[in-house]
Length: 325
Image (cartoon, rainbow, N blue to C red; front, side, top):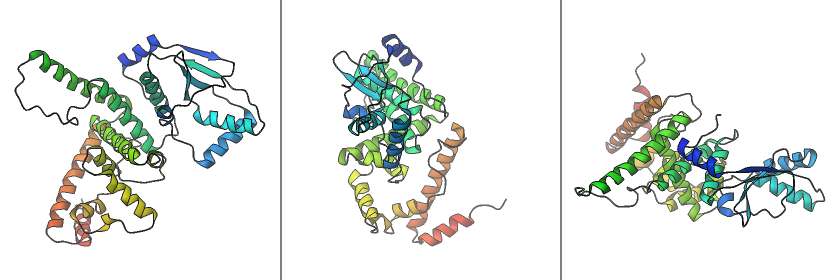
């Protein structure tokens, strides 16, 4: 998997303001901040046990990376290694390690580096990859003025101030350029990047209700439909609805969504097209074509449901509507 790259201008900025110093000495006063740590998925127990055993037997191969903002040294890469080192130290194993210092003007730029660094890893799950791409896009969009649509500010008036009109158009163009840049580098469609942003926002909204839910979704422990998470991000579904569904599924109860409603019928009869195209060798045009076809089929299913047909009957129609040649 290729390494995700930042916008060229942004990257050039970072290089001018960044210094990296490899240190052979230890730094035992490293600071762990939650908003940084939350960008890293926790290891599963067996993964962490394996890492800890590898460090005990072979030492620490890669240096811990620290952001030095002059007043404190904040860990930005190597959280799992740092935890393993501390546990081993308590068990009587004092293992040497290296620290690399990085300097960023702001905490937000340090977080940008963390996201970029995470996207370069080979062991990301599909949900993690989608989440990080969406998060990066949202952060870039926020730097260009945020999402005017989501702010609730709908402007239907004629713009008389040419300067304001230019600024508004420029902001919208910046959003498009950001999505296009990410899409081009990741080999996906611009709309796929925007869907990833809705997906990451939906996960963050769920995490506001239950902080642990983010890690459980990104690790694959909890499996939810991407469309449902996107709808949370778009404000179409209340997060409580999905959380209740998760609770009932974990208690082996029948969730409310099993009722025979048009929306639930559509969910159960969706075409078996994989929603996550990141791992497939498809061009952006092919992905957009599949998504358009999916929307048409979904609309047709809704219309069929209104006629009173059962799920079995609609499934039969969909199965037998595909031409043999």
